[in-house]
Length: 187
Image (tube, rainbow, N blue to C red; front, top):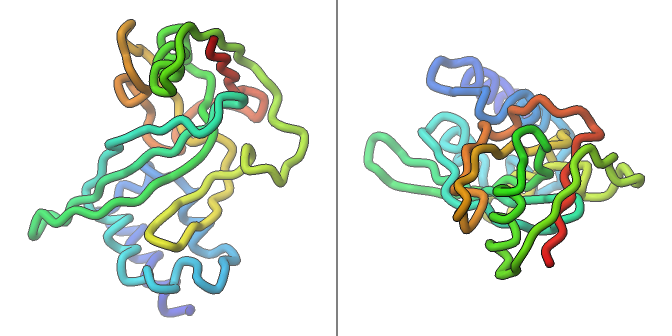
């Protein structure tokens, strides 16, 4: 296990990895306690790929609207052979930049009409609820990542059909404190 930890530190510290894409949360999660099928279950050989290969968000799915929680699907591409792989990250949306167009995009993605939204919402009262956690999901191995917010969205076009159409921060990069949740109500 120590050998694997050293490999991850080398990978994270190398110039190939843009660690700001995931921030220190992933790094902490790599050293955190994980379930027996966690990080080094069947997926250990693939973690290097998740951290080092070029990646982009290809889908954003709304999981719940109050507080707004999403799952971002990320595509990674092996530069040597072009082979693609996928993983997802799940967490809450930070209010910075969130506006009526973003709220409309949330509701459109759910097949609903008019949207209203409220910002500066306090976090849920129970710190053990999923609203106060982020998850990295790869194959059958979910890993909890210590964080409150996944990302922020801004400058959505008026006709956006989902949050992927909006400008978005890199995953885990935002300027939100714990009480900056967004609640969206679709009417």
